[in-house]
Image (cartoon, rainbow, N blue to C red; front, side, top):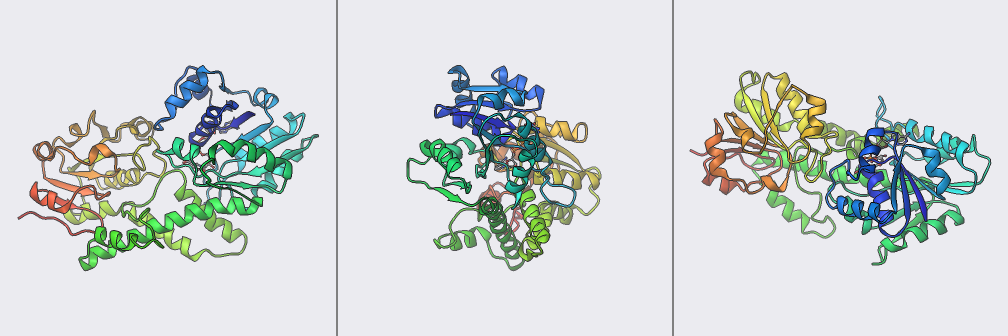
Length: 438
Ligand SMILES: NC(=O)c1ccc[n+]([C@@H]2O[C@H](COP(=O)([O-])OP(=O)(O)OC[C@H]3O[C@@H](n4cnc5c(N)ncnc54)[C@H](O)[C@@H]3O)[C@@H](O)[C@H]2O)c1
């Protein structure tokens, strides 16, 4: 098949590359000229494990192309994917302006039947809006399909090539056939392609993300209560996760969910509920708890040092919103940095992949270290904000030598309490007893 992917970000680039991997011809379109020039030059513009191998192979074999010219891409393709941003608007609702603007352009450009697929995360009723926007200028037949994406950054290639399920929302038999054909190579193990109407498909994506965000948030509240009553959240986590109705995943407590999806999707679903006259009580609580959770380590820091942190310097391990990505959108680390700077503290950060992105936003406001140990020099304490594997078994002896105070605030519960005691660290984590070596 000949496929155009409009919007070549985390989702669009993975989608385009993985479609090329199964033999399709793919042209990726983006308005960001610098990004397109990079990709034409053979450079992957984001950090996503394993993507580079597929990216190189498909470019070399002539199946993956890049352009800034939407018309050029559309003319060659019968299948058009929209992987455009849907950021939160000022009131928290999803901003559909990117999608609707492209939809209007498509109406003018298409000269024969096309299947236009919305891969972006969009509220219920968007397929109808996209249909209307294309129809305004179109003189040929087309179908709009809702095909939300469930990939996780850090595992995106694997998730795309072996999805748990593919959700396709369409009432058109003609479009359904095209989508079935396209996804066949990805569901050979029996993982389903679930067909439904467009509205149900759109809501499936928001319901999935909001459910996961709620699960994380519930566990964070349990962790906070563990601290109050002297229970150990890790024991509780294993205790409840062994129940197959609950499951082991998404039960790790921490400093709140972040990233480009959960925060905006929970907000957008709550907002979408309001628009339809429905009050999502549970999501209101999730949003409130998460707002507090992402700065909970700063509360612990202030409980230790007092509210005025002038003259204090903190090392920060991790800036990305989670491990294995350079994505810093809604990263708890950034919320903590803001709070720390406001309280007068200095921060020296290290992240294996995300520092360049943070430098663009926080130029001159914090320091950056060349490696994780360099960040510790003369710091009053270490803050662990991302669970990068390289932070899991560090050289504690060296850490103790470099830090001014042997003090760790761990937002990801990376270290065993016994180990912290053994190495003589003062240690604060989430939902577990504080360690204060005598
Ligand atoms: N990132 C994820 O993990 C993830 C997972 C599932 C779903 N989603 C959803 O997928 C959508 C895209 O997310 P993303 O993270 O890939 O966004 P992104 O910001 O990484 O990428 C969007 C791309 O679209 C480009 N763009 C903007 N306007 C354009 C236009 N008019 N024409 C062509 N290109 C244009 C931008 O330059 C950018 O490269 C969102 O709705 C998001 O909620 C994201």
